[in-house]
Length: 478
Image (cartoon, rainbow, N blue to C red; front, side, top):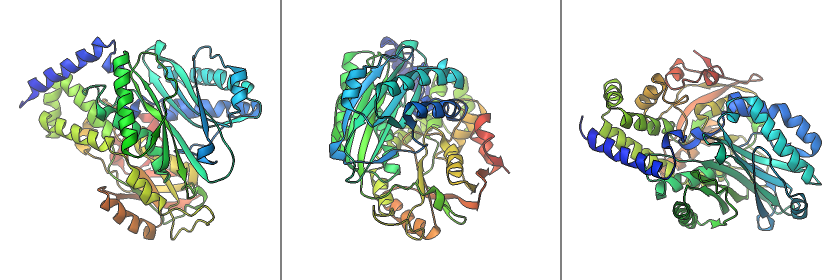
């Protein structure tokens, strides 16, 4: 097997380096695989407490890629709070003095809590109810992001509270934070940070928001030197895309963490026209999906020569080629989708203009942790039946191997992934051309079949790429 021994040795050395930091790299979920399960845990938990929280004055915004609200970006002030998960102490006077109107929340919780809706609901209710009691005039949690840790000492709630003046335009806000993208790479590499921040920004870019970007980093590491390196990488990345960077308080739990809360100004309406989605509209992705399968398969292949041999036998891909594919995909994930944001923005209504289906994009969404499941979310939000005709994967053989061998539950998942766009064919035609000009491979993957029944009809081959039964049952396979 050409090159395997040297690759495996290099991988083992990298793993030992992580362990010398006090980190078990195999306890880290790669990229967006670190998210609390949406279908089985997050959505049921939030649904059960949403009404009671609203009675207390705390509202949880509808599911959106980014929180979009009316405000002048220059008037926004951000105050970060970091709280214990088991017994969060909220500084009531400080919070009331700040007068927050909105919040972006990041929760990192132990896998025991994230395993089912009930314990997750309990800790979220305890925390949110205390926030609600501390804020006099109500507050909206516009965006929440929940991730899983294998260490109870790494748990925290992080809240970026926002106060601002009304009017003057729209602002989009988001938080996305991961632990690591690839444990086979140095945790302090520029590549790791670039993927993390590109992923944080991707939800803004998905709604066409890219102007006057602000970055409020979230980072942590087992030692101060590595923390400083990650911050330095973040500063360089922000400067590279013309964003301003701030440095609020950090969790400092000693675990690996990298991401950000991000804000951007919008000069056009966001693509939230779910009620205007109609039969005949097409569903397009900006590029193929499924990056995380490659990273996870590579790790397993490096651990066991027999698995490596089986991988080559089943896929016809050599281990050397697998490394090349992984490196290529990491570069793709590290690349900012800001040019895609500009293309999307150009096909959105002006702030004072009505939506025109012959000219404008109806809906977009980011393909990351949920992978192809985001199409089901679109069907629910637009109350439509969607027919999937294609599942374009970056490397189908690797995704199929990952599914067949239960390496990853959803081999369509990614990080800083493709963007799904729903619009009429005449809108997508010009958009597709513009996306190709910025180096992407847009593909039509389906169409809106009918109204009034939120369902996704997908080809049977989806089973090759999704092992999770809870995700598969959300589709009608034929």
